Image 1: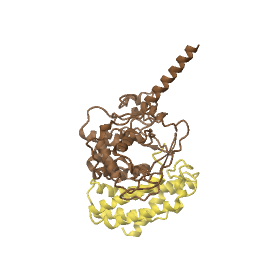
Image 2: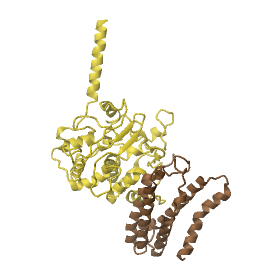
Image 3: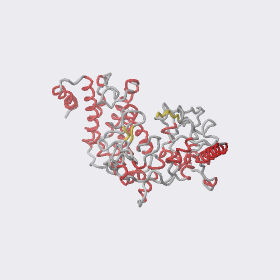
Image 4: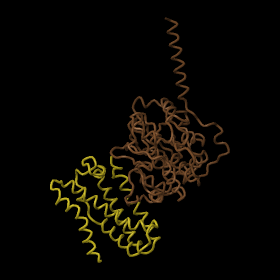
Length: 160
Length: 320
């Protein structure tokens, strides 16, 4: 699948939950939808990290093509401009479904810098994931750190 | 009448004297460090296991190979806000302290001038550590860069600002024995040492009673996040169904089995556990599988629900 077709597929997947939500529950607010889209975006990261992580942790056989595909997907996902997902009024203090701490809106520049750091980490992964297992394993560390450093400051702990 | 008054006065004096004696700092014996020399090389990984830098670096400090332990980080609790002090090797930090003074601070919660430390500093876990390991940590801290930052006072209101009362707290809630008792494999024992002592996991993952004492009957069963919304997760087998391999992978990489990545303070913890050996991470996992399962949130004792009591690993009052 070429890059364009793949992008289209992912974009459709991303839009699907929002589209379904719009169709099913007309009383959903823009804030509800923004939060669902964010959660969908995170699940897309997880789905691709899972394929890579299974290989990196030795639970699945290393497959260069599959690893490259998942890494390419992560680069695509991390490149998406998410600024419109982070609507005012969608912090954990303001919306029951939200795990996004108000600190995001108080430190938007730092928050966006952490998204850039994720893009850099997955770009590193993209350049080594398809080479060999060692390359995949070492780049995965950086990706985990990039995810964790944002979750550290900006995500609520386990829900009540 | 006068005799009665005298008796009351004598009783009050005896009572006050007893209370004063009971709440006195309990230092290690003077011989505790005889023949022990700290090894800074060994101390580095123990320092990571102890999570020292996670609290004692400034909140905005760069993450470096050699952390600057300038203090200043703020910890909001229901009892007030505690500020981590400077523990760098400088006159404002611990530069002028002897090894014995450092070990007494860490393992007994007593300052060089004989004051009690608040349990926000996890001496109630470090008190189970080997003196050699603590001396090694001290030796490593002495190799780190000095900071001249002044330690800032805690913002703790009356009555919690009376440090002597912490002697009473220690009588009630200090425990120098293990929570998990009974026959353990060497690996589980190693995990117990890391979890219950150095890494002080229970300080966040165990609920506290009204006075801030750890509920050892509900050990590691999760707790409200003192910083606000959310909970620190239950990591007993009742709350965490991950395999030992999955626990090890999380402690090394931060990735959970469904490839979320842990956040909050746990992100900082993973930076520390990533520095441990594979054997030590496996030991932590083996220990977590051996602790009694406790459903969360653990019911308060005496509410008629016996789940917490049945899950008890140790009685509240024993062994201190």
